[in-house]
Image 1 (cartoon, rainbow, N blue to C red):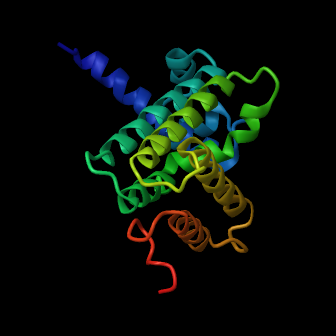
Image 2 (tube, rainbow, N blue to C red):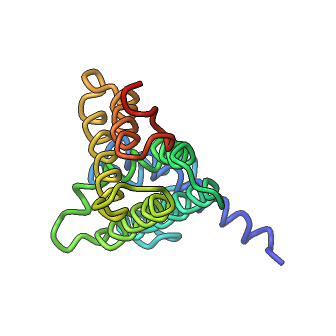
Length: 200
């Protein structure tokens, strides 16, 4: 049975993680300080290293929490019968998650040599590709087009759209770009699987 002290500690830890995730997405990892996280979370600055040891430990915990949220979101979209519409809804839900902005914002950090979060990013991308590939394998793809290659393309395009939008939101309409991506994917499927018959 969880004691009141353990419950309070868990609640504080979650508040710190939520605040850090928001700040890392808004300001970037390097620009975010323990003071920023303490102010945003309402938890004392000294509690942060007590829970996570270091700023790097906090970052890894934020990413681990985000990976779990992504997996939970994808699991909610799973169904026995696959269709393009279900895949589309799942992708829409994924790109709407606040964690998506975090992943894009921290991408440069993950690409640094010896980055402590590189492994987490590989795991995140693998999770997204595997989920997308499993859906695509249940749809009638044209001969010569593999579900693996199409999954890589879809995930890469989605991340690229969000990256451009974060850099210049006044110039990039993310919703229209994602709609264009959906139309392109639907266009490679046989008529009746997410696209109108050719010529209509």
